[in-house]
Image 1 (tube, one colour):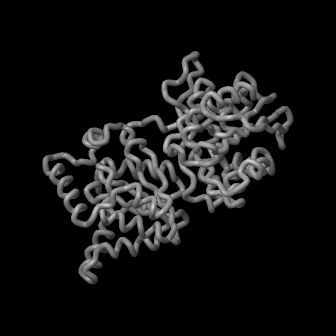
Image 2 (cartoon, helix red, strand yellow):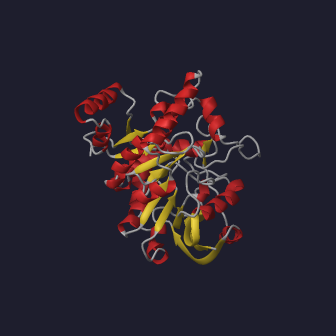
Image 3 (cartoon, one colour):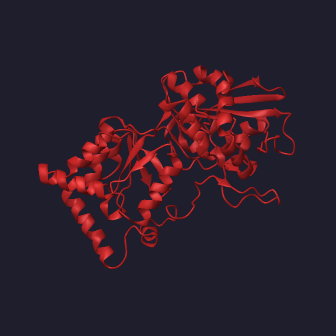
Length: 392
């Protein structure tokens, strides 16, 4: 829609949030999760002037913002502190949804962004305030501000939502320094350790090209496992290769990846995935809704997770998948290039016996269905085991 090199997303949020710590923190988090997207913030003088002029000319200042929404690529929303949506923000969001443009909403509790799937999803999930109720809520928030505080300052926000995820680091940020100097597990739940993350950050472009060369692997089993159109989550989607293959077969596919450079590389390779990728990873799968997906793909990912978190990873995979859904998970059973838990590039690798992984997944709510084995396409001395499980 825009002429910018990057997609431009509009930030719909209450005017009482303008210029606050919460506003900047949410924008920063959005840019971290979607680094390929530019942000259009209505909290700018030119937009306020446009609103005023449109109001004078038409009697409807909101027309300025709904017309602006028609020109942009997507939207992300922040609600009032009580979780409701003001009338103006609701109009803006609905303008994007009617065009089937991607819309994300900031979840105050988790500190992540969740996708709004449709107009019905939006109306059923959130209380949309009338114009009168919006004015009353703004008046209440302004009364707090007149007492010398903003309802969207760090201290007041934390008091309102009972959570530090917006201004703290929370449990959903997934890279932490490795603890190789001792035998204690990291204090925070991690997706990949610092050295592994650093490798992918530095070599993302090269790594994406390598992954795109693979013609087989876990995707060889997609047709059998996902025989009909399915809502699928790809955990650790890397270059987006498997997401694209699933999408080509008519599946409603989404992906999570903790490394921003890989997410950018995936969108360069597969621009059709815009709005379907966000920052998250095992073991927490933060920002992924419970019972949201009918299928889950986890290819060559668990090997990077510290084994002390395998149980958490299995539990959260079961959390996000619906009963009866399909899990397709691939792990290495042989890596001749790994010495002391790392390959020659410094990436951490952990092998797990197929029987041990099966026992763990069955303990956490899955039922083994079938397995496949194959040698690596491009490297000798590497063997993969892929398990197909049903969510009980």
